[in-house]
Length: 419
Ligand code: EPZ
Image (cartoon, rainbow, N blue to C red; front, side):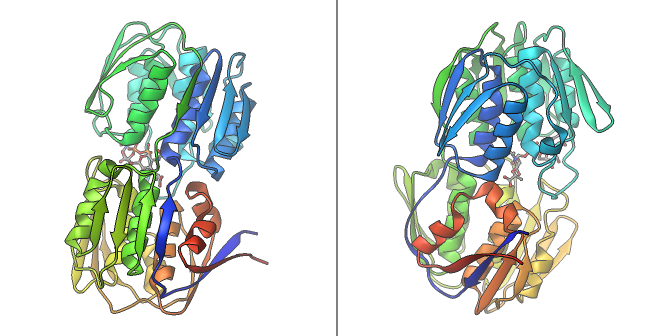
């Protein structure tokens, strides 16, 4: 049985919220710690389901992982197993980082096809292209990638798409390869930079992270380090959407405003108030959003992971809005749930056409994936009446203490166990 969130909507949310560490950075940094022949301490981890699952996978590979709140102590000195437990691997996309880390550390990896949100086919061809270019063999055998690399040799790798996962996976293996690797058309997301900085803190030689060309010189060993994960930009953007949607006034602390520029600009275009500080953002909902168009892009463009919460905001805009989802081919499954709440949205391929309505109404809905769950929370907070969201397990994968944080801002929300 899974929990439900029951929200009585229509209340402006106001106050201060502290952003947790980035989910998409945390899962990559933890996997990267397997490369270390010593002890690493990673701080500011979000206490979310994906971190717990990754800990179990790392322990199955022989690492000792102590998780104390938001701090993990990882001792990967004696890892000697390269076959990740398939039932855990299929729980999330980030399992694919075990391939690059195990190849870099042991020269072998056996990792199942990763799981993750059902938002598209989520191919692995660019991961395969990059790791094979480094000299690894990578064959899909009964649903598992069986990989071997007697020697990893640096190479120049061009990514057809600036894939976050492929960029990180290649970096993990390349930092232990012999010689020089260049990743061209690399992803520039902040969490890619965070992983590169963590690898550098362990002695890796990586330059250019955050640009579209990353240069890596392999090293023989990586030593222990202490590192703190960067704030979660998608959680930050979700609170920004909630402030606007509920006509509230939320100050989001411990975030990186620079990472949110495309989101802040879009909110201002909608007529919302956005104030930027050194390490905080303040967003005030000024009334009904103006209609806008949104095209999701790789960083620094508008993040695909905020497409769903922002579509909810536009569902009550004062006119017609258009969303073009260029990253995933089927990231609109949640629209059917939104229609149950009165949204008027037509979807054609990657385009969503939204006719703003006066208001949504509360009803029973179900989360279809992590960010769809977040979107339904935004919808429930602004809808008239009561919204009950099932499949909360999706939300727990990426949002730490979501109920407590909402209540601290004045939301009328309860978490109930089904059945
Ligand atoms: C990461 O997924 C994130 N997940 C996703 O966040 C995020 O949506 C995505 O990056 C884009 O920002 C984690 O970091 C764990 P990609 P990933 O490789 O690595 C193409 C969330 O809600 N592609 O950039 O899988 C393909 O079209 C999750 O937190 C290939 O063609 O993203 C894919 O749709 C959802 N071949 C697109 O890139 C490949 O080998 C984006 O993939 C890989 C990707």
